[in-house]
Each structure stands twice: as structure tokens, then as C-alpha cells.
Image (cartoon, rainbow, N blue to C red; front, top):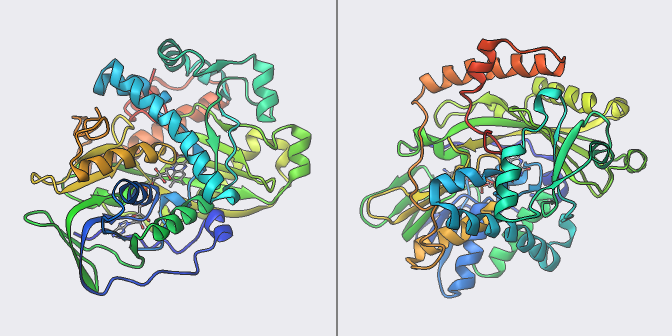
Length: 466
Ligand SMILES: Cc1cc2nc3c(=O)[nH]c(=O)nc-3n(C[C@H](O)[C@H](O)[C@H](O)COP(=O)(O)OP(=O)(O)OC[C@H]3O[C@@H](n4cnc5c(N)ncnc54)[C@H](O)[C@@H]3O)c2cc1C
């Protein structure tokens, strides 16, 4: 197996949080109780949970880059729950378990807030909610099914707002309507991931950076090979995000697409003027979703999902950064906030998203012997849910028969994608149709029927398809 990540272009977040103190790569052969592949939010939360449950456990993290070098140090910092996926959760695990998991994902937002208060006060945790908006007539009421279903399961999950309040909260009249999920938050993901790494080290987790796992033995006691070392472990957790798409067992369960982000220079006064400085995180309702938030220093961080497409485990270098796509994202920023056209863009970066068919993560076993647990497929909503995932993965590898080991997401049967190259080619056809459809809608024109039909083949995004 070769999974590759050569992310050297750093996001604004990692530039601010710093990544200079690289931990030594693995050399020689070592043994441990649990080896975790991947030092992102999933791997780090799981390591911390394992050491909290069983302090004597010997836990090792193998990270090919630096901890946070993957999606965890590059994301938009939206800390969302699973409420937008409530219908998919019900379909997968039934009403009661779906409710338990959705509430757990909401509580995860608070847990991240508590972690930040204790260990990462610099991580800018801000609970100002998530504003889900329409920026064209066609997007209006995209949320109706999700809101109706969520609010009947747990009243108050979403708050319907008058249209002028949506414009006021988002700082732009180009937001025509929307709903607020008030319990969501934003965070500085760079500071958070680096604080998690420090917390894991303080708890005694051994972390090897620059240690790409090149081979996983599935049969017998797990054995992981890196360029210069070997780990023999009783149990393994695979937390490699989109890079897991290169594994034969996961190939048709993951579809890798990019998400691209730009960040403006700090403009606190202008944000004060438009009233968005400490406001909520915002998304539109496009399939190629735009997501944007402000930072404590007064920057706008604006992202757009879904452009570049991965081929199996191979990702084009442009999955790290692409100037043309950054220009496209900037155009969307200016479309929604025309008053910010003159503001310099100081940073742009990209990263891969590990989409699944229902946008819920894969929490499963890689092998029949159930020694290698998998936690991938967060589908662009992993900052908050990785906390829930860490509880599930910890119980799986510790063999605990508790609410997490028995969680409805464990080994859930889900739809698969066609294999590559069919998926790769089909993905491009569908993406082009979505682009044509959303361009027509932005101009107030009806999209062609063929573009609409092809767009409907896209897997659900952040939220359930209505
Ligand atoms: C641009 C972008 C924007 C996003 N925005 C949001 C958002 O606003 N809110 C949200 O909830 N989610 C968002 N996401 C998704 C979110 O970042 C992830 O779901 C979340 O960080 C969980 O990450 P992870 O730990 O699974 O993966 P990662 O952070 O990618 O960690 C996996 C790690 O595995 C390492 N690795 C890979 N292969 C190997 C190997 N063979 N050996 C050793 N190590 C390996 C990688 O280097 C990487 O560090 C976004 C993602 C991107 C890319």
C-alpha cells in the first residue's frame, strides 16, 4: 500500500500556529498496544481518549507529515453537529440511535469549547452559530426537510429567522433567507490541532512525524511499515482521511474532492461596519457549497467545496493549492461581499475531502480479525464529529461493550461508488453539470433539465438532500 501526502504548502492556520518543532521519525522496530495512523483531529482525539480511559496503554501515532498537516490544519474551522445529516442517521441506525448520535455531536461542540478553555485559549473558539442561507431564489428553503425533522426530534435545533435578520447577521443583503443552528461554533483549527498534539504528548502518547505508513499487514498481529521503521501493535486505528481511498477495502466507499479556501487581510473595522465581525459561520445552499467565517483578528476566511477530483488514492498536486481555483473562490467572496473587493487576499490553500455516499463517516473494521479499526469519510464535517468518532474508535479497539462500541454507525452498511476510472470520469461529468446549473441559478435563469438531472446524481453534501 502506498498512501501519499506531500503537503508542504501551509494554510493560514498552520502558518499562525507554527509547525517547526517536528517530532522524530520512527526508526527501528517498536511495539505498542494501539498504533494510530494519522495525526489529525480523529487520530489525536482518539489517542487522548484512549490515554484518558486507560492511562497505562501504550499509544503510538504515525503521521506522514506533521500533526495537522492534513485536513485538520486546513479546514474552515466550522464546528458543526450531525443535525444536518439527521435523516441519513435515522435511515442508518433508527430514530432513537440517530437522536442519541445527533445530540452527542452537539455535545462535542461543547467538549471542544471546554478543551479550548483548558488547553487552547488561543484557538478562538466562538459559539455564534451556523447560518445556513440561500443566496439565490433556487436555494430558498433548501433546509425545510432538515429543519422540520430535526426540530420535531429536538425542538429549537434550528431557528427560523426573518429574511432581514439573515442579511444583518451575515453582513450582506446577498443572503436572501436562512436558518440558524445556534449551538454551532467556529475555531482556529491550527491552534486546536497543535494543542491536541501537545495534550497527547503530555499524556504520554508517542508521536512520530515524517513517518508515512507504507504497508499494513492485515493478517495476524498488525504490523505497520514506514520507510525506516516497523510498529507491531495489538490494535490499529486508521485515521488517514482522504488518503485512505488508496486502500482496496475503502476504494469504492470514498470519493475524494478538494475544498479550496482564501483568507483576506485583517479588516476588523470593515467587518464592524457590515456587522459581521463576531457573527455566525455562514454557508450558502449550493452543492459546491461556499462556507465562510470571520477570525478574531478580523479576517474573512472563505471556502468552496467540490472542485478537483481524486483518482483512487492518487490526488493531483493541485489538491494542496491551486491559484486558478483560489481566484474562483475569491470571485464568490466578492459576489457575496462586494464591499470587500479591494481587500487583499493574503493566503490561499486547498485540501482533500473524504466524501462518502451518505456523508456520514465510515467506522468499521478493515480486516476480518477486527484488529484494525477505520475512522474516515467525515465528508467535510469532521471538526466537531471527530470527537464522537474518537469515542467510537476507542471503544472499538478496547473491545468495550458500551454505547460507543455498539453505536449504530459501527460497521453500518452503506452505498458504494463505482470504481475508478468510471467514478473519476463520472465525477467530472456531474461536477460540470452542477457548475452549469448553479451558474444559471445565480443569474436567475432556469437550469437545463439535463444539468439538473445530472446534478441530482451528486452524493448529498453537508446536509441531507431534500
Ligand atoms: C479545505 C477543507 C475545509 C474543511 N472545512 C471543514 C469545516 O469547516 N468544518 C468541518 O467540520 N470539517 C471541515 N473539513 C473536514 C475536516 O477538516 C476533517 O474532516 C477533520 O479535520 C478530520 O480530519 P482527519 O483526522 O480525519 O484527517 P486529517 O486531518 O487529514 O488527518 C489525517 C492525517 O493522516 C496523515 N496520513 C495520510 N496517509 C498517511 C500514511 N500512510 N501514514 C501516516 N500518516 C498518513 C495525513 O498527513 C494527515 O495528517 C474541511 C476539510 C478541508 C480539506
